[in-house]
Amino acid sequence: MDLMKKRWHRYRYKNLTYLGCGLLIALILLSLPQFRTVMEKLGGLGYVGAFFGGMLFVSTFTVSIGTVILLLLAETLNPMEIGLIAGLGAVFSDYTIFHYIRNRGLVDEIKHFFEYFGGDKISHLLHTKYFSWTLPVLGALIIASPLPDELGVSLMGISRLKPYQFLLLSFILNSIGIFLVVSAAVVLRP
Image 1: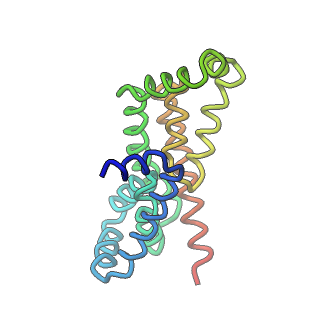
Image 2: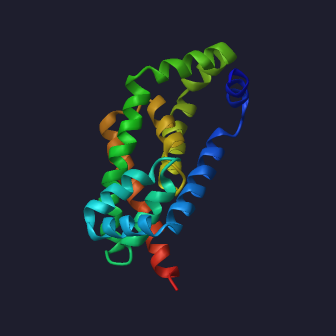
C-alpha cells in the first residue's frame, strides 16, 4: 500500500485524472434510468435545482454532474435566471473553498512550500506590485471559464483580496460563465 501512496504522491496529473474520472462517472450515471429520473426531479425543483447545480458546477469532481443538471434545467427555465440562481450556488461552494484556503492554514503551507523551494526570490516576486494584481485577474479568468474553479479560487485566496470582493467577483463571473454554457446548449440543441 505504501508503494501505491508514493506513486500517487509523485503522479503529476492528479487533477486531470480526477476530472476524467468525474466525466466517466457522469457518463455512467447518465446511462442509468434511475439517475436520469433523479436529475429530472431536480429539474422539477426549478430554481432550487439550479442552485444545487451551481454548487456542483465549481468542483473538479462534480462539474460534469452540475453541468448536466443545469442543461436539463435549460429545457424549462430561462438561461438568464439559471445563470443568476446557479451563480449563487457557485458562490456558496467557491466561498467554502476560499475560506478553507484563507483560514485553515493552506496559505501557510503554500508559502512554506514556495519558501522552501524558491526562497526569497519567489517571495519577493509574489509581493511585487506587478505580480500581486495578476493573481486575482488570473483567478477571475479561471472562475469565469467553464473549467473547475479550485485553481482560480486558490489564486484569489492567496492574494490580498477581501472576502466581500471575492464574493462579488465570484457571483458575477460564475453567473456569466454558467449563463454562457446554458445559452450555448440552448442554441445548439437539436
